[in-house]
Amino acid sequence: MPEAPLTPSDTGQLPLIDSVFQPTQNEFNRQKFVSALRKFVLVDLQGQMHQAYDDLEVPAYTAAHGHAPVNGREADKAMEKNPISRFYSSIRYNTQEMVWESVREPIERALPEMIDISRRAAHENPSGGSLRLDADLKVPRYVAEVDVHLIPGSFHTEFTADDVAQGAIAAFGAGVFSGGLVWRRDKKGRFGGVGESVAAYLSRKYPDFKPRRILDMATTSGKNLFPYKDVYPEAEAYGIDVGAPLLRFGHAQAEGYGIPVHFSQQNAESTDFADGSMDLIVSCFFFHEIPVKVTQAILKECHRLLAPGGFMVHMELPPQKDLNPYMNFFWDWDTINNNEPTYTAYRSQNPTALTLAAGFEKRNCFEMTIPNFATFGEERFNRFVKGELEAPAHGSGGWYVFGARK
Image (cartoon, rainbow, N blue to C red):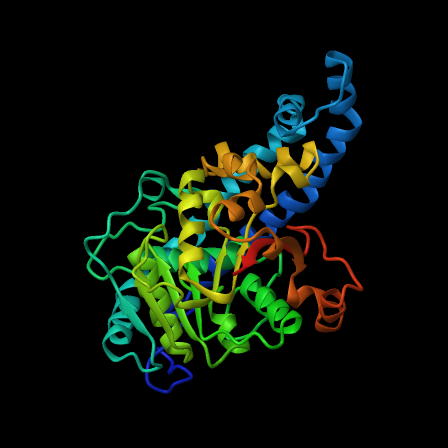
C-alpha cells in the first residue's frame, strides 16, 4: 500500500497527524489478524475457559476442599493446571505484545512527519487549544518502572526531541487492541466509546447540567475527552497526563480535527488548577494502574477542583465485591500477566468508600454500569436512562463507572 500524501485537516490549516500513519498492505493485514485473534481469545476462548471452570474445576476443587471457590484467588488456584486456562493465558499474553508490534514499523517510518506536525500544532494552535509541558516533572515510579500493558517504553519514554512515538503507539495500537470488539462509532476518527457514552448519559440524565470546564485525568492522547466537546461544545476541555509524547500527539490530533483542548503535563495527585475550577472531572481505566494510596490522593484532588454541583465520573474496572469468583479470576489476570501490578489491589477496594474518604457526601455518590452508546443504540440508551432497560455487563457492552456530585 503506497504512503498517502499529507491531507489538510478539517480546519484547512494543519495536516492530520493520523494521515501519515500508512501501513503497507501486509502491515494492515497483520493488524487485522491481531485484532481478530484478540477477539477470539477474549470471547471464544474465554467462553471455553469459563465452561471448563464450571464443568471440571469447580467440582474438583469442591471435592478437594469441601467447598467451591469463594473468591478470585481460589478460582485462580482451581484453574492453575487447567489446559484451556494455560493456553488462554499464553496466547493472550503473546497477542498483547503483537498489538504494539503490529503498528511499530509504520509509526517509525512516519515519525519525522508526525513530529513536524506536532511542532506546527504547538506553534500555531489553529483550533484554539494549547500544549503545556513541564520538563521538570518527575514521572511517577508506577509509570516509569513498568511497561504498562506490555507497551515497550510505557507512556512516557522519549527517544528523540519532541517525540510523539509513544502517543502514536498508544493511539494506533488501541485501534488494533479493540478493533475486533467495536465500541466506537466511525465519527471523527477513532475516538473513545467511554467518553461518548458517559457524555450521552450525563446530557440525558441531567439536561440542565452545563459544565463550563471539563478535566480528563490521565488523558493519554485525549481520545475519551474529545467526545465531550460534541455534547458540550461551549465547555473548555482540559487533559492532563505525565507522558509528554502522549500529550504532543493528542494536541496535534485535536488541533487537526478542529477540537480545542488544553493539554498539560501534570501529575493528577496535585495539579495547578484553582480550587473549584472544574465542573466535570472524568477518567478512563486510570485507577487500577496506580497504587491505592495514590488513588486516594487523586480523589481528594478531584474534590478540591470540583465546583459545587459539579460531577466526578471515573470509568473503571468493576470491583471484586460486585463479581463472582470466576469473573474476579478473569479480570485479575492482568495483575501478573499484563504489567499492571496494582490491578488486584485497586479492585479489592470499595469505590464508594474511597469517594467518601475524599470528602464527598454519601447521598451524592454513585456506582453504576452504563451501556456503550454506539453498540446499544440511541433508542435503547434513552430507555436505559429512563430506567426501562438494564445495561450490559462491563466488558460485554457496558462500562462500569463510579463517582459523585459535589
